[in-house]
Image (tube, rainbow, N blue to C red):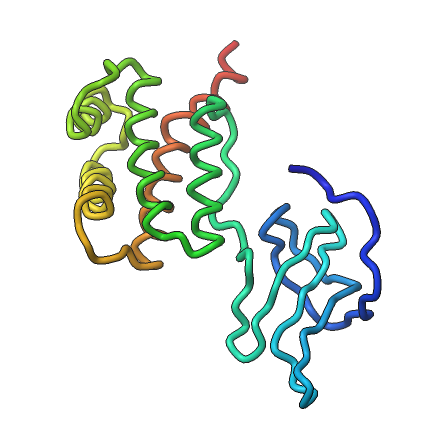
Length: 194
């Protein structure tokens, strides 16, 4: 989804506000915003317009909650298209506080990475984790964090308690490291070996 074309009407001139846009990922200082005010003059929230993509971001007065929130994580080069889409989905889930969905996306990423590297589709989830470990797609000593992704993914799938923000961030960080190791680093080295 690219830039939103058009012009917003009846908005105020902004000053001194900066944030990371949850749509385009840019660090911005918007020029325009809308204010939601009660009859008592109290401002309940504001909608700022990103000067880069022209899309609106809501900020709750008092709590400072941003919706959509900043896109978590970093872009990773050399990802296959389906892996990149799923990784982007996990990052976006965090930006809207969908922590269980982010963890489930990380779990699915492990499965997709295994299959993209030669594992047979339709196997058990633990077989995909084992495949990654046995075929050296995870760095030495990192099987503990890959297993942690598996366990938290199982918890998100089969347990009643919700996944916390901290759990989701941790799993996305681990997943990001795995994607860098499996795709980005070999992709960068390919430029030097051809």
